[in-house]
Image 1 (tube, rainbow, N blue to C red):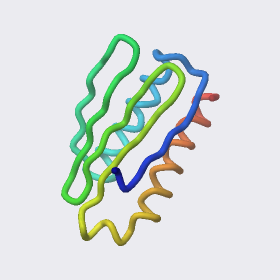
Image 2: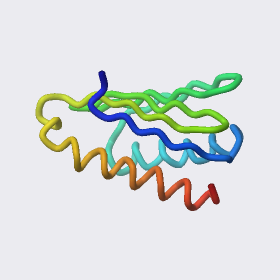
Image 3: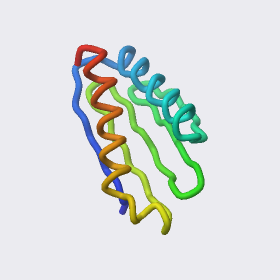
Image 4: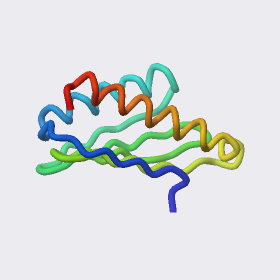
Length: 99
């Protein structure tokens, strides 16, 4: 079971959701030094992200985003703060997109 699970519904459709996901990936790479890979799918995409102490996935569909992440021992102590920051970043990107 992941340490962090976040879901957000939206009405963007897959094309616009991909744009939001690309922004999320850019932030994750630039601000948090995450290694990210983006796999396009027919009805949903999958972003895998990792860095020392955290590993997870962002699932992107035309109607929702789902983030699951597992924290390492040291970052586990900061779970609440990390989860809050991920939620804030995703919510801000969704608000900017008009969802």
